[in-house]
Length: 439
Ligand code: ASP
Image (cartoon, rainbow, N blue to C red; front, side):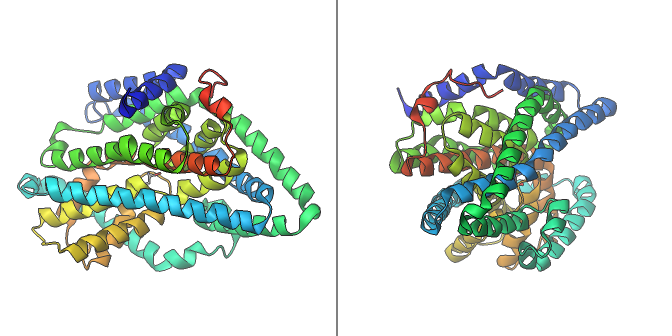
């Protein structure tokens, strides 16, 4: 049987195990189409409130989970050499996966030319409405960029905790955990404390997952009800390029990486993470999906040592889906405006997209904001391209749902490869489809 057939069957098996989440997803799409927000604003508002409540409730566990996971992960890895080895491997695999994503994005966008002819579809009214939104996003991005590098350094970890700033939190916890690992036995009370926090947050995640079906339903319905047929005019090719790119990552690159670098059976891994993939699609947030990504991977045999180190870092730093989207979007904008792109500029776009995607938070919409970094890097500003940008905003939620699914799947793929390389995977659990249900 071909690998792609195996993947489809694997996902179906995952869906069967938690068919209610899939049902929520499909019902959400149908309800969203039947009840457009423009005609049923009250229904849209209610769906939005339910969906947001679901995102809020999962986000409630993200910070305690990330902190406790990293503390346990690093203190269980123990010696510096092993930690450096895991860290290097993680960066190596994340780089390969993101390089593949930007290459695929660039090749597809150059071959399929999604921006050609798109400008004739620009609706001046829609562009005008979008202008205010785009301007505020740009202002936010500019202030973000100024403070971006300084903002990574955790001046006051409690402030970062209060504002939910994941990168400084992770940097602080990494330093703190390495120190804990270094001080030896005296670290026991603190490590045990975080072990209890981790176990409790995982329990809460299990409970929250009972809400996954209604949550995913409401989020999907609310998003789909905002789509209008007219917004696809002129940009269907852009959407097609992205969808193709994401599918290539999902069905070719990840299986290829799993095959080359590990002996993890592709189908088994995809079955294991189906719930996380569905929730990533519904929430469009890698951070919000993180508790479930950890649950799926741990319950299916990837050691908590690897999960707790690789997955939280991946959810904030590894955004191959976002990098692919940013590459395609910038080339699309250039084509729309008839800007010639030399090979050097295309290479620059790809490299900048790798950087910009990894600086973006695992929350909805972040990737479209950090795209300004790529545009600035090649001497353009979003203000110059505001009308073309309005296309991207119109499609944003749908594209975000797709790219987040890819972002989350790649975190799990890298965790599985490292776990295999380090003998940190329990194949009996991974191969046993009926072993322990996630929800
Ligand atoms: N929503 C994406 C994520 O959470 C980030 C992005 O906007 O690209 O992974």
